[in-house]
Image (cartoon, rainbow, N blue to C red):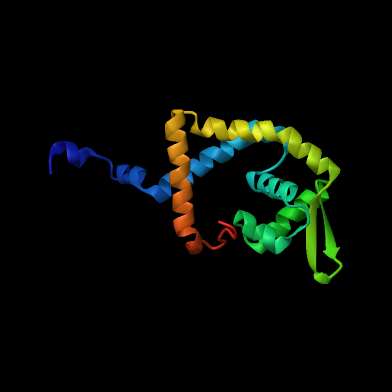
Length: 160
């Protein structure tokens, strides 16, 4: 071992580990999201729920959880918080009283429309250091990793 190798801090290896880097990148994205979307008082997960309900109104809580890769308990909790703010409404399915269907309220729809530019700005800011071709390749690689490992997560995405 050379003198130079000996002085290398042991934590440097950490910065070449994908799990560490993905977690750190997620922390950075959440910070960027909050900077861009602070006035809406939402989290990235709440934003995802709103976007899915906008595209698929009336989705039940279990399907919604599978759509964005969160567990049912988290989905229920997120929906409760959004419902308390008047952003989402839940209705019992008349054909299956055990099932609750979720919808964006008119307030929720307007809020999501107002949020969209801020959400997009947060995503752009995250990948801004990459040139456009690198951004596309990065997203392709992320999707590949998520697809290949989806079944290993605690809450796999349903429609991947």
